[in-house]
Amino acid sequence: MSDTDTDAETDTNSDSDSRDPTSLRTPIVAVLGHVDHGKTSLLDKIRGSAVIEGEAGAITQHIGATAVPLDIVSSIAGDLVDPDDFDLPGLLFIDTPGHHSFTTLRSRGGALADIAILVVDVNDGFQPQTLEALDILRRSETPFIVAANKIDTVPGWDETEDSPINATYESQTDRVQGRLDEQLYEIIGNLSDEGFSADLYWRVQNFQRNVGVVPVSAMTGEGVPDLLAVMMGLSQRYMKEEMEIDVTGPGVGTVLEVKEEKGFGKTVDIVLYDGTIKADDKIVVGGQNDPIVTDVRALLQPRPLAEIRTESRFEKVDEVSAAAGIKVAAPELGDAMAGAPVRVVRDRDLEDVVREVEAELADIAVDTAEEGVVVKADTLGSLEAMADALEDAEVPIVRAEVGDVAPRDVSVASTADDPKQQVILGFNVDTLSEAQRRAETDDVDIFTDEVIYQLVEEYDEYVEEIEQAQQ
Ligand code: GDP
Image (tube, rainbow, N blue to C red; front, side):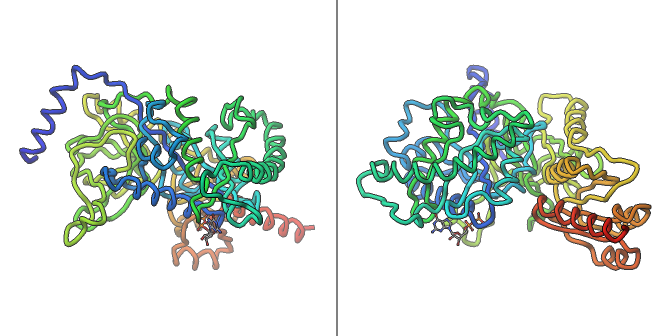
């Protein structure tokens, strides 16, 4: 520890007694939707606008997430957001779009994201991954807004200079909204058969419709101010209580990614959603086997691009508070899993913290049967999502693990009596070459895909083929 670190520590401690530890954290926002509907473009546009507006004030860099502070939301959204009306500090966008990262990012049994943006291409409408995303949002009870994207391609759409919200805009908005509403209501109708209440989407009674649809163009940026204003407004109105945290308390977060980093060894990128993590904290991280107890070696945040010359890409910081994305370097992280919990031990009994991490991991564990298929996935959350989908399809699972398809998996699958179960379903994973070889000799079929939906469909078709052959 350097002297500077110690000074910083003393400063923090000296005023912590007089300070109300309860603060409001930033709502965490995830972006979902079908491939090519514009998730990445929309995030880029939001990030780009935030950088332009934030040039004067420094924007804190995050790992895996983009923070848009309230004053910047307000500069982007103009009259639509008056900072005096808000006490939430802004919005934190998870940088990796798609439902894959969404299911990976869990927190205490729920979704890490507090709100989602479901991106739908207005020309393409609801596609398989839109439906899958809707299903995931429903399961995790995450409120969301539909961003009806690519409105610049709608014939006759007219963006006027004085204000995007004018008569033309409104009639166009209604047109797009009407089109999506039809599809949405059909889906909500189906979902409500399973006890789903449309009210969950946004618990918004006075928002005209149950689901907010904001027309946007990720290309021209039209509608982005409106989208931010709606997100901010609804968060402030409906989520304020959920955002109350003890900001000085021991940090709680979720592993976003496990990465080898030159000079630091294995590191974990985490999203912190509660409390504070400090550069000298002891932490407990969910691992492949047991919880990993280790000491933080460094907390790293990306350097602003302009400052990266010969310097490292990262800057060491003394502490960060929720909500934040940060890279943690520490020994023993080789076994850490994406999607696993991270907890700071500070001021707490180590045993208690380990037990909590174990409990969270057990909560994610998949129920297995005596007989069934082998399932592999790249993260805990995706393994769970896979297991849920198979349960719905009444497909039993004999073994479920995080990691690439390995020879051991083939051995397990090959012992099944039923040919329909001599199968490995891999979600977002690779197949090791030795496993591939062995699968060929042992007559085991390996299916891999990056869309759960499609993987289950492929398996269904395979089962049908076998059943037809047996008749
Ligand atoms: P993702 O797969 O959902 O992340 O989609 P991308 O952001 O990669 O976008 C897919 C394609 O659609 C790219 O070629 C984008 O340039 C294009 N695109 C995205 N948003 C818009 C938009 O608002 N208008 C138009 N015209 N094209 C868009």
